[in-house]
Image (cartoon, rainbow, N blue to C red; front, top):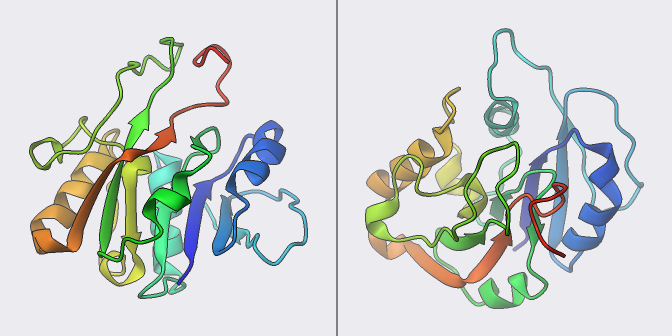
Amino acid sequence: MKYHILTPFNREENKKPLLENFKRPNVVFHPLIDRPIEFPKEAWIKPFSFKRGPGIKNIAFHAWDKYFDSGKLIDDDYYLFISDDDFLEPDFFKKIEDINTDVILVSMKRGDNVTAARYGTETLIPRWHLLQRSRIGTEQLIAKGKILKNERFRDLYNADGLFIGTLHRKNPHQNFTFKTDAYIWFNYLEPGRWNK
């Protein structure tokens, strides 16, 4: 079983720190790219190229859908949805390695300062009653390929909450684990958001 990190990738200046942060045993990094970007030729890095569709408003959701459409999802492997400026806390995989449910929901720290992106700084902690639009981010979702195969994101600003809400409605609750002490660091590489 492997962990696949699906990252819509555009910020080339973040390539080196992201590769250093993501590189772990059993991790496969898939930068999802709609233009030529060079990556090191290493077995754990598998770029996925896609063509941007007309009229797309949210490239991240579109990129993830294109990957789903490719038929590359592996039933019992896990998939993470991480942006190209997010980080995983250092012991992230150690905290989730013994979990085997179809869906894992983790927490997300969002830094110290509100920036031009206007996202708040409160920590998002997954709870059943919060699995709705604006109360959870795609970065908090880890899911096995078998339950992602028939799902797609919508081209909406808050499609992440809708997507996770759909998984919640369609799958038995015993297939979910809430790992609230494992953290994504939201927009960690965005200048000014984190006091480092």
